[in-house]
Structures are given as C-alpha cells and as structure tokens.
Length: 246
Image (cartoon, rainbow, N blue to C red; front, top):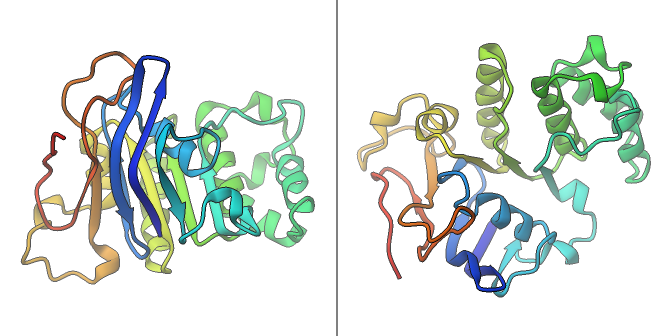
C-alpha cells in the first residue's frame, strides 16, 4: 500500500506538487492521471526517495522508501526506460541488478521471457527501440518479484500488441494481490489499461475487487509548464472523475 499525506514539492518559487493526498491499495490497478507537467513523475520520485518532499510525506507499506530493508524485493519501479548502460546487453543489465540483490539467474531469464525480450536478450540495450527499452525497464521492475509496482507511462513506445500485453500483465499482477500504480496523461488509454469496461465503474459494479479500478486524477489550472497547481489527488472507485480545490 502507498499512502501520501499533504505531499508537496517546490523548487524555489515554483510549486510542482501541492498538498497531495491519496492511498493506493493492493489488489487493483491504480491509474495516476494528469496532463504533462502536472507533477506525476515528481510524485513518483518522492515515493521512491529520489526527491525529498518540501512538506508532507509518502510511505510504502507504512515505511519511507529509504527505510525498507530490501527495496528491490518490495518495490519495482520504471521511471526512465533509457537509464541503462547502453553498452550492456539486456541480459547483463538485469544480471548486474540481480547479483547485487541476491536474485538468481533463473529469475533473470524468467523476467526476460515474461516481457518478450528472449530473442534480443544478448543484444546491446543501446540499440533498443523505445518499446524494447520499455520492456527492459518493466523486466527490471519485476526482477525482485516485488509486492508494489510503480510505472511511469509504461505504454510509451509500445506497439498495439505491446500495449495489450502490458494491460493484461498489470491486471494479472494486481490480481495476485500486488499494489500497482501506473501513470499516464491519456485518460482514454488509462481507462483501457486499468479497466476494459469503463462504463461499468458505478456503485452497482459487481466485479471482483481485483477487477475494479482506482484513479488518482490531477486536474485544474497549472501555473506553469511543470506545476501541479493547487489540487488534491482523489482516488476513485465506481465514481466519475472529479477534483477538489484546496
């Protein structure tokens, strides 16, 4: 479970994230929606301890990310698919991560097969297309078999088959009881990624809990191109999207 309370981030006079409150629960795919520059990536970086909040806090399973005893085994993240050693093969990139975290080589091969990179696993990652880089990043996120997944725009660069694959993968991971947070600036794409039947998101929804969807929506006016503005993220289940102004 991921919980944020009054989470804020400012760079000088520019407020990027302003008093954000939300809970991401296990067993469902939670869509993190908002236009480009709304503060989604910054929020994810704060969850992962890469940016320090100006105020407020965010925890994973009740702890700050820095306090997790085995982070890769508890949280898998994809923030920037290109953040790999371009001279290494996909296999060696994952193997280096595995060896520094006590993960078996069998698990490396498993995630390679899972994301569909078996045929190119020995090729340099620097020669990968954007879509292949996304798959490699997802493999790295899954490497430690974590209970929490945080993926920033994971469908970027994927072809239609790849997009369908990631939709089904995320649903399956949530059905296993994992916490899954996925960002996007496209409402239409996220409604499909998180739920193939958006019109069923009503109070009369009778689907099992793991097939229901939560959405955290960042909307409202943006003071600048990289500013979240004055808003609170609102988790939704079986309700239409709306936003609250502070």
